[in-house]
Image 1 (cartoon, rainbow, N blue to C red):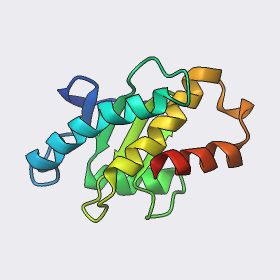
Image 2: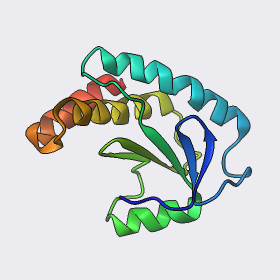
Image 3: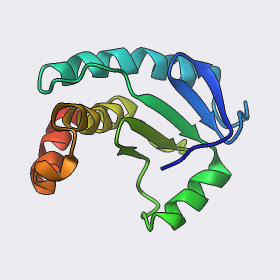
Image 4: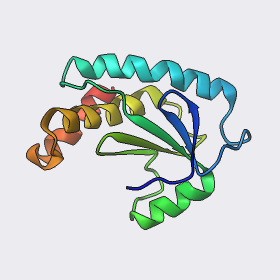
Length: 133
């Protein structure tokens, strides 16, 4: 997935397509910045993850477009693709630590085996669900 027009917030955390302070509160961003290293450490216990992924915060408008383009249901709040995590705009989700753990596990699997198809999808999702909890 190619991302143009990214706006860097802090190390490895980006906004796509632009930053709107009404969409992403400073408190939420601060909490997210604390969750990411914790999640990385958790996933290191199960995979050979070595690099922090780039994490893209997708604006509300582009979240809807990307979900449609990828044929994703509206309940999907984040996805991982290769070495990146994409977080869709969503103020209703309260369990961001679980979401980031889940997606970070997928990144760890990708970094460990370099090909997600090597690991059965059911196993990858089941363990990601477990790690997320």
